Length: 181
Ligand code: SF4
Ligand code: SF4
Image (cartoon, rainbow, N blue to C red; front, side, top):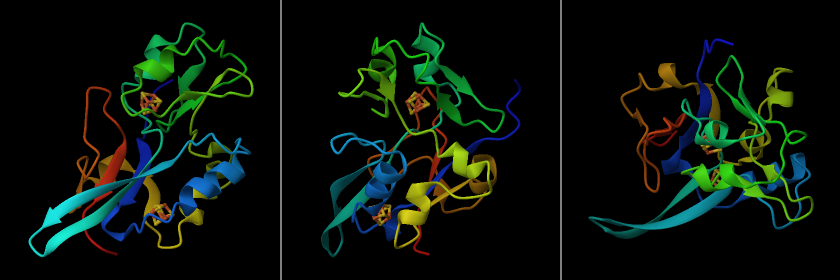
């Protein structure tokens, strides 16, 4: 299958207030156990001229162009859709855990309830019906969106670098917008 788009998450880091509503919306939509999270929100303390401030990073699977999870999976449980979204088929997963070890963004973990890997599939079942992922609609200050990463990267304020986030060999498809909406 040819990849004709690179759909990824777009995160407006300057807007994030660290409330964690995205994490909860994702857990509810995906019916995850209480202790299992696809999306996490990390706090960083950043020194600025007028003193230290808290900066938050909301992150999940980066839907990488070179997905390490897919490359190491012996069960071929991962595939890349033609829009670039990296999807895990849990029916095929044997629970070996290689993908969880290989992912540089800690985006995969093994579920305690069934011993299989699980991760964010960008709510493709919603996207395919013209709807938005649960984290996007769950954020009260609209700091998460999805978009064509190549197009979004044309904005001067967009890059693959942010507080707590950076590009790497797997070519993550998450873009940080460094300006307030
Ligand atoms: S972030 Fe991790 S799980 Fe997601 S596509 Fe990249 S390597 Fe795979
Ligand atoms: S819901 Fe929005 S503001 Fe709240 S932590 Fe998530 S991304 Fe940040």
